[in-house]
Image 1 (spheres, rainbow, N blue to C red):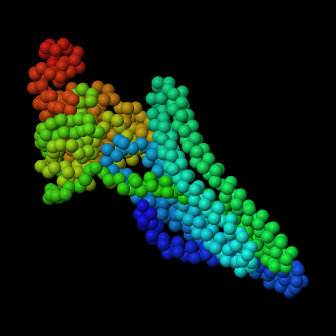
Image 2: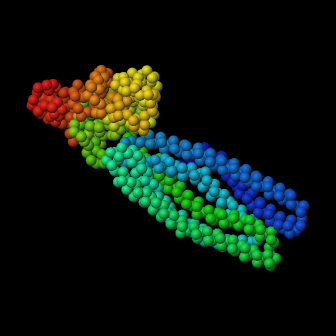
Image 3: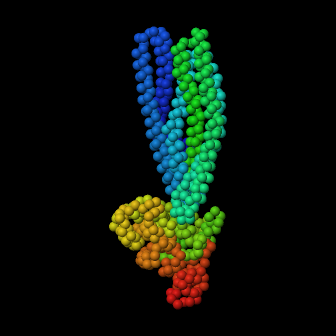
Length: 581
């Protein structure tokens, strides 16, 4: 995991080494001022050698300015490296998300991914930009201060060092106990994120059913749990930090008492005690900081584990182990299903589907809710793989088609339309970014969207809200259809795309679809029989199986689901053939 993480820092390794060198110099300079102060006390104040006053003051000021400059340089170097690292890491993770399949998103909460892409990544940046050099600097300061103080009085320094193992032991147990608590904090933070995200996304449903109080109750439960997880982590911290602080304070007591006695015994000068006093921070500060730094390190490891786990996730859609020669250009659009089964979480959805669709034909897919219609069309673009059987495009198994060749050949307009927070023009040209404004307008006219767009104050430059908020369901569906028509794939899938439009608009859209007959292979998923009556092949699904298939004129003659629904939608009794055609 850490080797993988280092890969994002490798290109800055020389800058980081330079920054570490500056940190060494800066830490060493931290010893200079206390030592100069000791000389100032012994030689100038007590020794009355005032000729040394200005040189010593000049050295004090010079060392301070140099230390400040070097510190600014290495802090900015670490910050810049951390920002480049987190930028590359975020792009890598986002790229990974783009290549994961539907199955991953079906089992992963949006809140988890949002927490990972924000707070977890920021924890990695914080570790490189602050925690890392703080650990290095504090270790150096401790080593330098011990070395300097040993040269002044080894006995007193040895007594002070007797206290440090107790501080180290408390730090070790802090690190051991706090890590699982931080993992629980991160997990609960993700759950809290998910509750908030779902509430915001579903705010209209919440208000429509007057469920605000229930949503508040759910939020309070998760928020209270998040608070408790943080309190549990703080309790571990609160258990050990007073011990660390107490032993750190004991160093000062030992130094004052021991140093005072040594001065009285003429074994130490006042200036030497001043040096000890000036450098006691160099002993206590690293020990006091150790708890905080261990705290942040545990947070970093917990975040990095989650990030690394995402980086290792693979799509279940594996490339073919036996590549075949593919035809040049776009696919022709001939589909063949051979005994296709599909199960989700071991629950059968489709069973033994077999049929053939020639290039340029229109296929209607109908059936009761839950019969597997949407699952069937998902297989066309290999959003999922069948658990058994084969789906072939132009005689080649879909698993042998590279996704970058397959997906542009199969375009979708879904019932549940997703529009981006962009202009209407931006949403329409999403599938064909190189299209001209004139082409976008032409596609909108075909989709019966141009008229309502033209009536908007900003026309095609109108910004739609998130998920198309501000447009009616029918308007969103027509924009989605325009997006599909402009993309111009050889295979078009319309999953109940006209469910929210009026009958007159639907008739116009059907005429648009019929004009593409013979030019595009089309799959129409519908609830209205009139939508698919003109199809070359109609598939009637029930419980994942094909119950009936054929043309409209044949299916209304044979008893079954299709005939019953057709007559019901016409307002006729079954068996009353008057006007049934």
